[in-house]
Image (cartoon, rainbow, N blue to C red; front, side):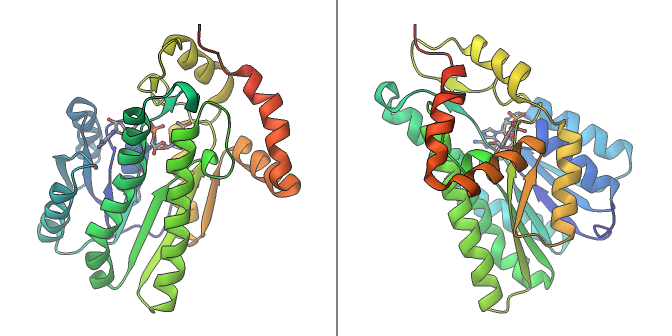
Length: 276
Ligand SMILES: NC(=O)c1ccc[n+]([C@@H]2O[C@H](COP(=O)([O-])OP(=O)(O)OC[C@H]3O[C@@H](n4cnc5c(N)ncnc54)[C@H](O)[C@@H]3O)[C@@H](O)[C@H]2O)c1
C-alpha cells in the first residue's frame, strides 16, 4: 500500500476487528498511529503489533460517546505528533431487535456510539485536519447504511445517518476549498467480534444470532477489509464498498429502488431468528 508514509492517522475502536486491522495496515504503510478503544486489553494487543513493526504509536482509552474527552483527545494527539492527517471513525456496536420490542435506551445507545461517536470524532479532529493541509475523514457506515432489514432499525438508523453526515461533509469540504478529503465506507459481512459483542432485544438468543452472523454473513477477513478501505482512501473515493456481498447488495438496491424491501423482507427477514 502506497501513500501513507509520514501521515498521522487516528483510529477509534482499534482494539478489535476492522479497527485493529486498519491500524496495523496503516502502520505497515508508513503512518504513525493514534489508537483508542474502551477495550484496553484488545487495544494493548494492537499496540504490541504496531510496536513490533516499529510504528510510532499513541495509545489511549477513549469512549467515543464522551464528547468533552474526544475534544481534549484531538488536541492531545495533535500536540503529540505535531499534526493529524487522517481520522478513521470506526468504533461501533450492533443491536438486533424489532422496533416493537426494542427499548428506547437500546436504540439510543446504538445512535450514541455509531452516529454521535462519528460526529464527535469528525468535529473534534476537523480543525486539525484542515490545519494539516492534507486531511482525510474516513467514516465507517455499513451496507446497512444503504438498505434496511427487519430487526436492525437502530443500527440501520445510525449507519444511514453516518452516510448522510459524511456525504454532506465531503461536499462542504470541496465547496469551502478545504484540504480535507472525505470517504464513507460500507462494509458487508466482515469476520469480527461485532455480533458476539452485540446487544439484542429480550427473547432473542444472542448466541444464535452471533452464530448465524459468523456462519452465514461474515465473508471477508478484517485484513482484507482494511486493504480495500485504504485503497479507497488512497484513491479518494467518496464511497467504498467492502466485500462481494456489499457490491451485490448495493447493485440490487440501485436496480430495484424501494422495491428491495420486498426482496429483503422475504429472504433476509426469514433468516433472522425471531423472539421465543
Ligand atoms: N463486522 C461487520 O460485518 C461490519 C459490517 C459493516 C460495518 N461494520 C462496522 O465496522 C466498525 C468496526 O466493527 P468491527 O466489525 O470491527 O467490530 P468489533 O466489535 O470487532 O470492533 C469494534 C470495536 O469498537 C469498540 N467500541 C465499542 N463501543 C465503543 C465506544 N463507545 N468507544 C470506543 N470504542 C468502542 C469495541 O470495544 C471494539 O474494539 C463498526 O462501526 C461496525 O458497525 C462492521
